[in-house]
Length: 339
Image (cartoon, rainbow, N blue to C red; front, top):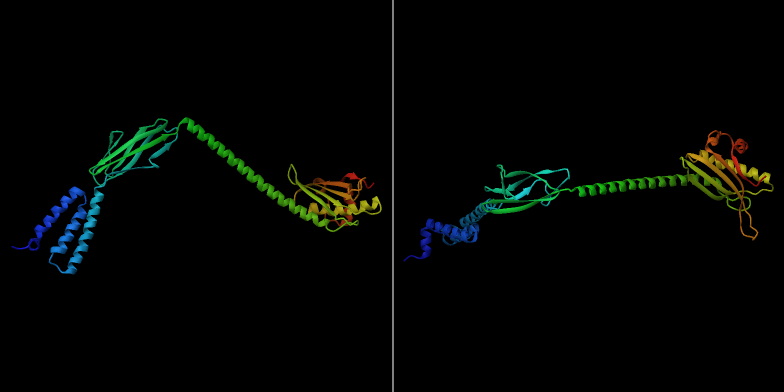
């Protein structure tokens, strides 16, 4: 009596049929037909096929690749359907309050024939399994349940279409208005900050130009420089206000001459060297002194003001001697202790 092995070798066709039957049984029970066929076929190939080893290896690899491709395609074909919506984010859509109706559109991914219902109502599908459903909307959430079924299973999705309520729309409008106002205020603040920074730069430049005329010390050993204030004016431009420690000669007449020389120099610099729109300027002379208790107490002795309308008429190109004669007739004296 011949062995079982010899029977498989003599009856390869019957063996193959038996392997297919075993694979079908495994598939029916375990739904793993690809693995079942591959295991049975590889077993029969290596145990009973009377082929050279190299041929067996090549056949084994080829059979495995082909079977994997077929099994993958088969599995994809047998996947349950998948519903996807157009213009939906996380299964939700939000509309404006004035939108009273909405058309739900999407598609179903299925390799098999498939049916679709929305809230129990069957929807028609085109050849690509696309769908479209127009419905009216109430204010607030509108929930729609979609169920797709094919021969391999089903997919259930709930789509929420939120129609913005009037209260929400009013709140959104209020929030937007507040945001716009805040943005405008921020823009105004930024512009004001930029203007202030620009003005500060201009003020610093004016101070730097004028302070050059106040270097050194006066004839009593004090520094000429006392203070320089530059202030933006209401109608534009700047005001420059200079206070300095004046030279103190032997008489008021001589002191006034010294003041005239210094003031002429300062006004000329202010109106011709700063490069800015100077609307008004003043120069104040101070003398060193002490109060009744012996403490330092400087005294304002002479102050003049020269405004832009007058300064614009001055021939600043004239020599200093001429200007020192002409300017005292043009500026306004507001403080005079040198009479």
